Image 1 (tube, rainbow, N blue to C red):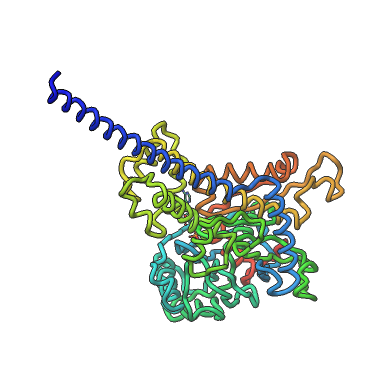
Image 2 (image 1 turned 60 degrees about the vertical axis):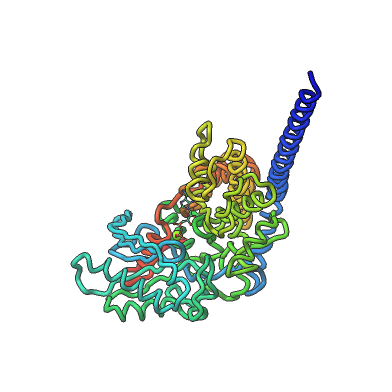
Length: 497
Ligand code: ADP
Ligand code: MG
C-alpha cells in the first residue's frame, strides 16, 4: 500500500471512530434520559404510596375531622353541613315529581313517577353546562336552567297545577331548611361572584317564576343526599352515600345528639343527614407530591378541596399531564413533539382511564391517544408502558384514598369492625352496611372500582369488608332529590331514617 493508500485508510478509520464515538455518546445520553424518566416515575410512585398503615392514618384523621366539624362551625376543613333531611323516603311516597341536577359537567332534568313502592324516571334530559355560564352571573346560569326545565316540562301536555321540584345543587350550601340555603363557596371550577351568600333555592324560584313555569323548589339537596335518599328508598341498611364523579363528596346519617354545634336540635327520627363536604378534607397523612401542588396552583380554589383534587374526575387526567410534561422536559422521552403536554387539562380523566385499561399487547389505544390527543407520534412500546404506569399510580392512589374516606365514615358510625362485637349482637349475625355510590368516574372506570374494593379489604380485613356493600345508584342524585321533594311536599308521608 502506497503512502496515499495509507493516508486514506487512516482517514477512514478516524472517521469511523468519530462516528462510533458520536453514536456511543448519543446512546449513552439516550440511556441517561431514559434513566431520568424512570427516576421521575419511581419518585412519583413513592410520593403517591398508600400502604395500609398510611390509609389507616387517613381513616383516623377523617374521624377526628368529622368530630371537629360536628363540634363547631369552622372547627375543621370538613364542614359537616346540616341538611335538614331528617326523614328519608321509605316507599310510601306517591306522585309525579321533577328534579334538576346541577353541579358539575352536566345539567340534568328528570321527571320521576313514584308510587306503590316503585320509582321510575319517566323522562330525562342531559345537557353540558356552557363553560361561560360557570363564570358569569347567577341570573344567567339559573335562567339557562329555568328555560331548559320549561322546555322539558312543557314537552308533555300536563295540567298547569304547581309541581314540586327537587333541586340538586352540588356545592357547599349552608341550609336554613330542607328547601332553602345559601351558597358558601364554589368548587369544581365554577366562579360566579354574585352568588356566594345567596339563597340558591330562592334564586332558582325567581328564575322559574320569570320563565312562567309553575314549578317550585320543595327540596334543595346536595347530590350525596339525593343518592342517599334513593339508596335508602331501595334498602334501609343504607347509611351513607358517596359521589365520585367530576368532584367527590359524601354524606351519612348522624344522630342529632352527636351534632354538638347544633345543641337542642330535635328531629322526629332522632337523626339527620350530614353533608360532609369531604372534598375539602385535609390531613398531613395524605400523600402529596409536587405535582399536586402544581395542580392546586392552577385552580381557582387554591388551598381548598385537597382531597377532591387527589380523587375526582376533573383532576386525575391533569395530574397525569403534569407528570408527563415534566418527563418530557427532563428526559425527552416523547421526542420533540410534546408541546401539547404543556397545555393544562389536555388529558381528561376518561382518557387516563382508557390508557390504564388498554390491555392490547402493543398498547395500541395508548398509542392512538398519545397521537390524537397529545399530538405525540411514534412512541416506542416502553414509553407507552411508562405512560400507563403513570395513569395507574394516579388511579390507585385516588381509589385507595376514597376507600379510606369510606372507612372513616364507617368508623365514625362504629361499623368498621365486626358489627357483631360493636352492636353486641349474637356471633354469626354480622350487621350489614350499605353505602350508596354514584358518579361518572366510579361508574365508568372498572379499574378504579377494583382498587377501591381491594383497599377496603386491606383496611378493614376480609370479614368486616364482606358486611359492607357499595351499591351504585344510577342517577341517584337527581332521582333521590325528586323522592325528597315527595317526602317534603303536601302528599308527605312521614319517612324514616
Ligand atoms: P357530574 O354529575 O358532576 O357532572 P358525573 O358524575 O357525571 O359528574 O361524572 C363526570 C366525570 O366523571 C367527568 O368529569 C369525568 O372526569 C369522569 N368520567 C366519566 N366517564 C369516565 C370514565 N369512563 N372513566 C373515568 N372517568 C370518567
Ligand atoms: Mg352528579
